[in-house]
Image 1 (cartoon, helix red, strand yellow):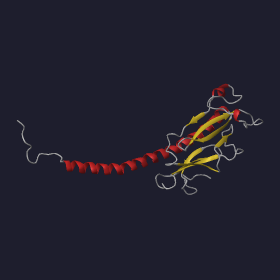
Image 2 (cartoon, rainbow, N blue to C red):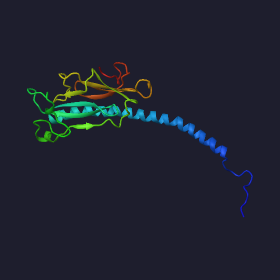
Image 3 (tube, rainbow, N blue to C red):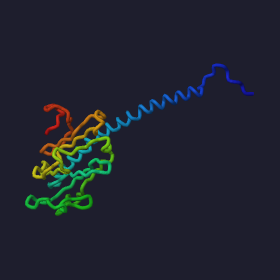
Image 4 (cartoon, rainbow, N blue to C red):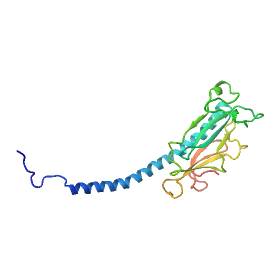
Amino acid sequence: MDQAPRAGQAGFTLIESMVALAIFAILLAMGVPRMSDWLTATKAANAAGFYAEGFTLARLQALSNNSQSRLVFRANAGGQPDWQVDICLRTTDTPCSVESDWSSVDKAAKDATGASAAFRSIRRSAASLPPSTRLSVTLGPNGGNAVYFTPLGWVDTSRAPRVTRIDLKPPAGQSGAFKASAVALTLAGVAATCNPDAAEGASTWCPQ
């Protein structure tokens, strides 16, 4: 025989359940945008490392292969620049002025021998970075889409315009979404992450 519920028995009424769901929905609506902003800020911070790796790897390949090398940027479907490292074994008397002199992802550089003959261009996709609507990536300082290195690992100043700085900041209308940063490349070919808003002389200042 079933017993009727006793007075004061614990439980939720329909109204209490609806109130709880409404509060949960409000908290969720507040939390999702914050989580999205946090993820974007984290990915934006990782973007500096992504592009610094490209500079560093291009310099390393020039030194390792005693060759000229270059870091080339190409926009992907999300609007952010992918990068690719190529090498060229031509001499200073016959500079790498023809595209076929350079390595690609499918073939070695022209006249490559030994270990260099096994090298294929290294390509990295920026697909994991936030799209251009969430992260502004600017190649600078004077335009261009590549930077070239000498066999000694220095930036080839005879090639211009060249990319020696990449600024990473929130796009227009989203100021403050995350902290702006930049990757700067010295003439010696060394890349470092810096703060574009830091005053000159500060430890995080971006060299011009």
